[in-house]
Image: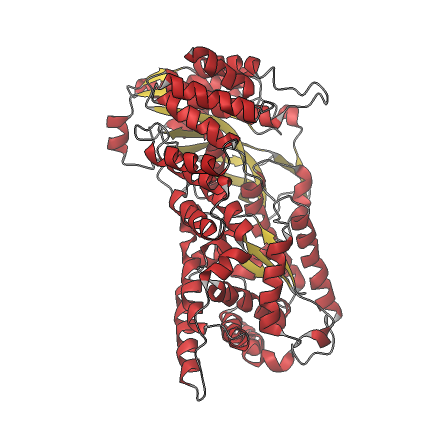
Length: 233
Length: 401
């Protein structure tokens, strides 16, 4: 049975992002009228960028994503609160709960992790006068591929392959940058995506996962994906 | 031109299959199921999915709920399928999307979301009867024959599985690439032909009548299935409502009901007491309210909790969850009276109910009512000293002094 611990903003973001990505091509990123968004939401706090556990998410990549999102928001006239503000609250709360690692098992204590995440978002709103929170996350989706070509979330790429070119259709896992902005009620205001790269390669008639250490290495692709995800702002 | 004629000629017998299906594949009259090696293979594929579902952690394992569903099915079927050597089984999945499906060997999958939205036993029975009819009429097997090869079924399922994988797991597992091939409920809710659906509608009503249930309730039951859009426009699991044929299906059920009522000797069964249903599925109402809360479906969550509280009015958890629907609807206030009222009701039934104490403290803190917040937090820490967030709450208390 799926027990339901207190869901926080991030969990909600993850859910909404995964649902929306499938139909991302046809959806307006704005969940409210764009003009209303521009009029109402002036100060936007960034949450520290996150990624699926499968991916190796290096600090350089986090910084790139934050830079791109911040640059776009500032260019559009918004005041941006950097993710370091929320990080500081999280650090403080992590210390208050005695760290997130269970001393007995050495594993992350999921209950403490969820508690810190939930309270830190609530505390961010309590302490600061902000209008919205932006969540940036690298997500993995399954999208259709045809004869080594795949197009998703504003990008079109050729899948790495060996062996002769073949006419075929399949589904392939890809990564995308998802940017979601939420209001004080945790209701989504803006959700958009930018495609980064496929996570598989074709070897003859088989699809094989690319080594994880090869993923999220192409700065140009990462920055472009982030730009795509925020370009509608 | 000749080639096209040939294709049409070759397809024609297949297109004609559904109308003759009852003659080709007797269900009730069968002496044993599965009836053929390829049907057995189909069962095996489907059971693979069911096993994964059962091991997936989203199951509602509650004997009271299972017993209630079994007794309802028993009322509809009696001993009519004893000779087949199979027994109906039910698997309840914690998922707010309104969905139900039949495995080809008689296990019926039901989402908590569907159970929670039904208003009485007859409505739930209508869906249960419909899915049971898919099994009794061996519709999965018939669909497979219609599609000519099992491989094609697998391909369809594989596509749906890939879609669902991204949605369900939220993470990438290379091994899961092999999982594609048998996401059964997607076939069951989207893949049956219109003819097979109509057969299941008609037979479902017959099963309801056998159990003495008012068949008129089948109509609102199926209309509820159109309510899935709130769970995401592109959700591949919302097949019931996204299916273009749902409107036609509702019209067809309406017609079937009218036809049945016109038959000589028809006597409309008495309405069922909603409380009997709410009592039977009470744990499901609570579980699904939590799921709807996560999905920000606050009104739906409250409606389910109100049903639950009609039969279990003293459960502090339900009152607390009502409070949560109000708080999450408007987390920064400024009016917290509705959520605080619900938390207080929870505490009236159990003064040490920790989640209500904490949230009461949190709302007082937001309102800058330091003394009240501190008192609630201290009670929370006393009630649950080992809470994961105890350290954070102590930090709040310190700040309030």
